[in-house]
Image (cartoon, rainbow, N blue to C red; front, side, top):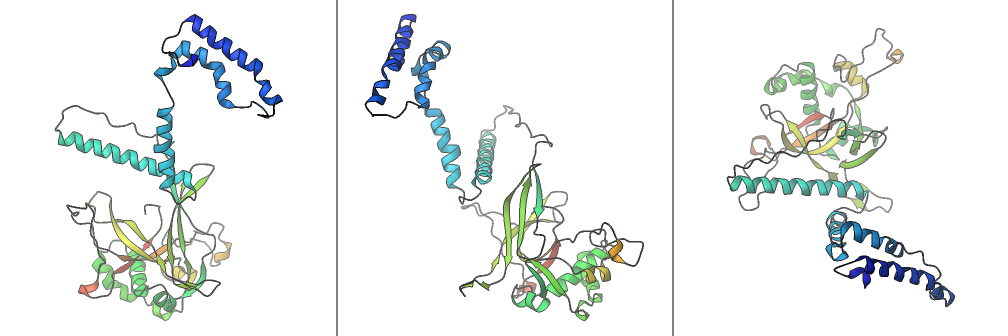
Length: 345
């Protein structure tokens, strides 16, 4: 009760210290009677600082712990409930960052609607040295080492895999061509003459590189239907993603796609068509490729199905409506092959 006084003097603070000293002198009786085994309680230690804290910061009715308790609810409990309870720390941090951005955006809209002339300076930006970098992390070995084109069509749904691959190779050989010219020139690529099997990956991981460590943030799946060890059929899993689009005219515009296949090109195909491409080809002064000390690593590609661009949002829900791009209003999906050269997804 002495600590809760709204007004304190030197006498009341002395009485507070004396009462605490008497308690410490007599508290051993509880241990002798077996009520407690020890008095190692952090809050009991805090009582030693009450007199000094009252002299520095005023009486105890001027402050309490409700502020930090509320912050614990907003920044810990609610943030944890928004995660999937796995690797929760990074998800909680990202959720809090999203909440702050939404709050800032809402305040900006309110300020614009009020037509205020008061200038609010923008928040300080994070220095580039402190900003984490994103990177793509792939497994050292593919999920399936050899997948035929027939299996890509039937199991993965990559119906236009060969035409899309022909267009991709043509665009890499002649980057100055427009997309219509690429489609016209793609017939020259006779991939059907080769019996190729493609290494396929079922996962694509995004990670934040923090220097000494990296943490996985998101995983994209492209897995066909399969059976588990109990012979139960597991459904196919093909994730959607946002990829950069070339229609932005200087602005970064994104388009929704559905990833069907994540793969790399066989070496024989690279040597045949893309040996001069710096992202794929291997430059060597001899005919023996095994003598090259630093061959280029394989570039991961993805066969994706395209969706329509973002139109005006719904005035009620505020959501954008998109649908699959189809060939001439048919049920045949428009698809293409894109490289994963940078983590812009």
